[in-house]
Length: 362
Ligand SMILES: [Zn+2]
Ligand SMILES: [Zn+2]
Image (cartoon, rainbow, N blue to C red; front, top):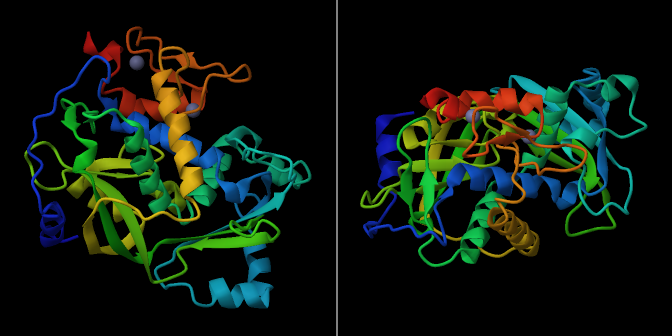
């Protein structure tokens, strides 16, 4: 990505954000990472497309299902024949609506349909998790931005966010300093097809198919924040990058991406050939058929944040403490009570947590 592009993005702000930020005991700063983890968790477990849907097959377990898709004339025409030359990999995940009675969507631990073939049942945790996030990330970027928007509507006036990328001092920003960054992604590297889910807006219809990476160019958006007085976007957060698979992970292996503008550009190079800015400066997403669901998702996160001393969450995935999965404390972090839902997430979270772990501060 060129320096001009980075500079032009930084100049996103027409009005400079110069107010002095203050924090109060009643509303301490909310770490943008924590907020992103919680919003993402609640977004995924309530995604209406996956209500009662479980994984029936996946090219991770059975690579030949991509050939089967190629022999389906319509699917081939719609997806494979026109796929961009930049695509290096194709993933296919087939879901089945196991029950209409289920009100939530399955958690990562419960993603596999009980009638799925043995090699699907045997998929390791890391692959289940990848399938979970690839499928729920489809078409998710504007909904993700709307989630932050509804969350900020619930915050008291003067609420601040704290942003820390690695081990530098956290920067306090105002939710009002946010801007929606919109860009064209060109030359996707991964094509993911998820099929068999519910069709939102048409509950009677089943067998929906969603594809990420089918077009040479597609729109994507992320959220930018400005440090006080800077007048331009300093930080970018993108909650739905796992739709591009393993390469979509954040700079430190997170299930989202949080970074400086330049860091974000570099991270995008993992998932597509190039990006081109098409819009910036907007602060709000217009209401849609998803708005009510996004609002209740934001409300649940606000409640979890308010209840943080009692309930807690996994610092990697946002999962709650439950009788089936007790949260494990980081053995060193007594004061800040950093917790994980499983050994896998404790390990995955360490790349980031090592910068702030109390163990390394002594
Ligand atoms: Zn977890
Ligand atoms: Zn720790």
